[in-house]
Length: 146
Image 1 (cartoon, one colour):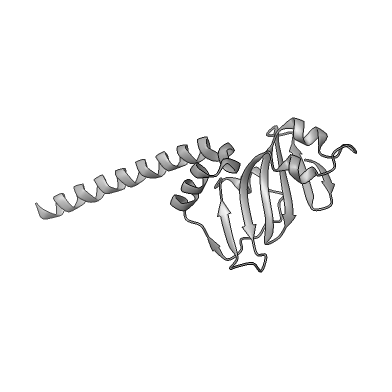
Image 2: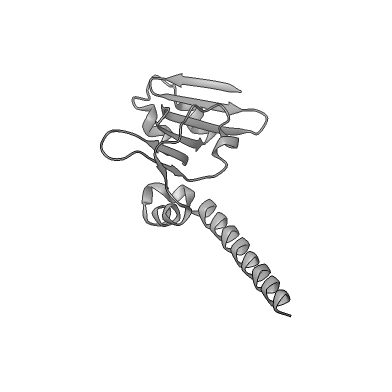
């Protein structure tokens, strides 16, 4: 893995997967992103005044907030964030938002448009599993009544 670091940010290129990822902040106050090669290539350019703005153009994977402005919370935008960013030092903080609430936020917030396709696919997968489970329970109940 190859890394680039600056004040409050860290980016990684994993040659095995071909993925570019990044972290803004650290610990209980951080966000993880999947970024493009272009962002990775330019994040440490001397002309880039705010690398965090460049990184935040990526697809957010995870966000943990504990900033004393309210109760701490965590949002998992992509449940594969640990696999995508095995190098991260993010920490879950407070209550984790449930999938339905996260899906709703992603649909409404323009800043999360990069997550919509992935969240919609995961939601369809969860719904299909729930429907299959429901059918299985109905069959077991019917079988036990016979």
